[in-house]
Amino acid sequence: MKTLEENEINKVINLFKSGLNYKEIGIELNRDPRTVGKIVKNSGVEQNRVKRRSKYNINEDYFKVLNSESLWLVGLLAADGWIKKDRFIGISQSGDEGEDMIEEVKRLLEYNAPTYEKDTIGRKAYSINITSNKIVNDLSKFNIVPSKSLIYELPELNGDDFRDYLRGYIDGDGSVGVYDNGNGYEYVVISFVGTKDFVEKCSELTPIKYSGLRDLKRSENCWEIRWYGKRAIEFGNWVYYNKDLYKSKKFCIFDHYIKNNKPDYLVYEEKKEEVKKLLTDGKKVMEVSKITGIPFQTIYTWRKKF
Image (cartoon, rainbow, N blue to C red):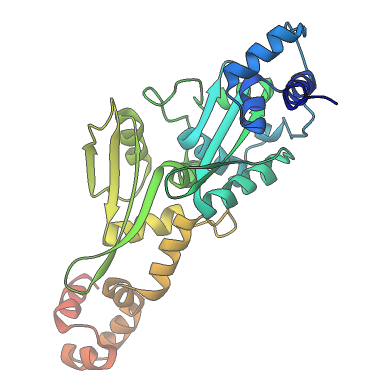
């Protein structure tokens, strides 16, 4: 009967022969990649493989055609993905919502590899590892390259392409939260981080002026851009315009806020045409205020612009 050690060695060798690298094998067998490497080298298995075929299927041409979903995924990988050498791609997300997002990535790429699960402090992390020269090459066109964190630059995107990309980026490295101002009023904040060059160029392509831009100083060249209050609502409505894209937890937080906490200024905007018609019909400002519930001061301001 084979010993447990021999069984483990055979598992390592078989996985290596199937095309997995040391890190991928280590994740699958919960072993240190260095230990895996020693086992492979001591086994005498030929290591100079020029090309290998993975046992997992994936659509390597996925990024050849750009659409809302592929641009969302480009943004997500730009924020949270990693590239190694010229063939390895990986992404990791935490919590139940992270597991759901990883499954969405696999669905888009038609990737049938297992999702790796790892216990972290307080919650689980879920990840996938991909080996594909083609995909790495396609992602490089969006500046997604090895060791990109401190140098990442915004790719050349405009219009809805930029919006879909930025939505994916925010899902990866952004934040959407609802906070109490201490007086019982809730307000929403949307933010994301990146290099200074990246966040500044994003601000130039975003039609809603940001509320704040700051150097986080927690690491080299790490900046945060944020929108809050009225601007966050406008920015959220702009970036989440496409209701057919993947609905992340961040999207759901914003969507729930909008549906349940419609701010006064949005209610007022919806009644603007009604106010204009009543004034045109000869109603006095105070009468219009009583009919519509809009403060008379606001109606006076509007009347000057009608």
